Length: 291
Length: 309
Ligand SMILES: Nc1ncnc2c1ncn2[C@@H]1O[C@H](COP(=O)(O)OP(=O)(O)OP(=O)(O)O)[C@@H](O)[C@H]1O
Ligand SMILES: [Mg+2]
Image 1 (tube, rainbow over the protein chains, first blue to last red):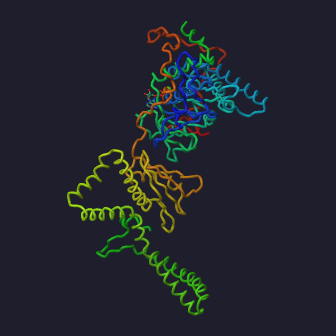
Image 2: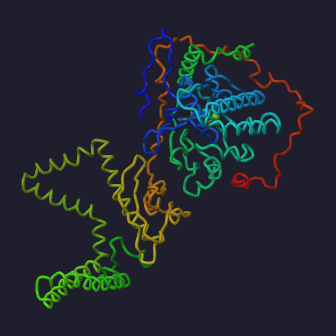
């Protein structure tokens, strides 16, 4: 499927923008695989864990996923980024943007958790088991860059554990009500992310890792023994990595790349369409930061 | 087959001035198989032919005819099996043999039908044009690599990949060029499994033998365990930046005054701007402790057993 030809671009600016017409039910264009074929990543009902050494291209991939979701008219964005700048360009398009503030992160995850519980209660009352396209409510993308910041660095042990527990609950139960988690961290070893949380992520992307064990931690135990180690990736080829998605077998892919100018263009457009359609209000928080 | 690694790729060795086309133990085992095949064919074909023939002629004549027919077929089979190690080499090199024959015959017919300068011109065109056009040249090179890789793999299978007791090697099926290198499908014979190929070092040895960067092996389908696929990587197809299509969704005429958050004044951006204050932990929060006892700290290569707990 070629994404570009399924879309009719919105008509000139004086009309109400209708959004790019993407849907989170469409697979996200991720890049190309080693055979030159386009690689797509279906994100609906799925979660992805992105790992790799610093500079492996994790945040770029996360930006691609967030960018796709931002252009979907009914997906709300909930961005957590300890480094602020990685997802910060999407701040105005997002419903919630959490910087290096673990209390805010926990409050946000609690909100998402409550929404999730309410949605399940609603579905149950309508004798349904999961949501579909164009449903009564949209989807929520929870994108978290540098999970390690929240789960191992900021705050005290209690807050970190609470954060990990909340995130685990959202990953575990959010699927069927359209709550999608995309999380990136450098080395998701057990001291950073509880293995019980790590193992819930179905899709994995391992950018270059510094050794075979780290690669196995991202992809799952045993892949190195079967010849798949992201340690073999050229450190200068950022954005390349092993992706475990639909086939269940790691696939070597190169992620698509958006320059900062591209991201700003897409983010501004997304913000504009979202504000016009009333999905997000002009953020109060932005004013507060400046004050 | 234990001596197979000493064989030259053509399957014969030259020892003491006398040319041995097939080595003695191999020849012996093939002769035994050929003898069995001869007797079985003689029996089965002879009986069948005799039964059918005696419908039309005297049973004794029919029986004789059956025996003769069985013996002839058995002899053909016997010859085929005894010569199989040599025939197999012809089969393995069939594409090259055909190509060579085509070149030689093509050249002689060309020479006969056109003057010398004409044939030279045609040859120059036929060879030169594809060589000059990069995509066709790459295509031809890719196909050539496919031929080479199949020979290299056969050599490796014979040399160091474990085989079964009869020494029957995996069947090397088709090879196909990919952007990264080649992909070869292989059918494993009884006695060998994917696990044997996945063993540490085997794929690296294959990569060395195929003059490649990396070789990976996996199942070619979910149906047969014997059907596997080898991916030989010799180029880096992922070196170029892939441009994201997402900006294409943005219309070109969106208003330039897109809303942005107000900027922040440049305060606290350097070390002297940030005061040195002692952090006072809140009294109700428990003291931060080391997360786990240091005895289970990661080993030098970064392995932490609790990661797999
Ligand atoms: N898919 C890509 N194609 C080309 N270049 C890329 C790609 N992804 C990343 N890069 C380059 O690599 C640089 C680092 O990428 P990125 O910030 O995504 O790394 P990271 O893994 O998030 O690092 P960190 O762990 O420090 O946050 C980018 O600035 C960009 O220049
Ligand atoms: Mg990053």
